[in-house]
Length: 72
Image (cartoon, rainbow, N blue to C red; front, side, top):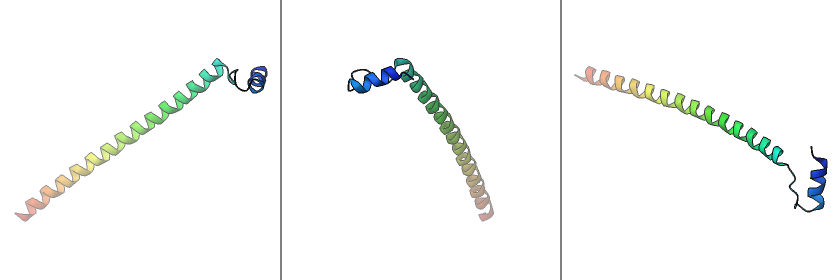
C-alpha cells in the first residue's frame, strides 16, 4: 500500500505522512467499531451484574422477613 508514499516518508524523515488519509480513516473507523463493540459488551455485563444484585437483595429481604416472622 503506497510504496512511494512510505519511501518518501522515510527519505524525508517524516515530512510526508507515512499513511494516507484513506489509510488513517480506515484504521480509525476499525478502532471505533472495536471500541463500540467493547462498550456494548461492557453494558451487557453491567446490566447482568445489576440484575444479579437486585435478585440477591430480594432474597436477602425475603430471608430477613422470614427470620423476623419466625422470631415472633
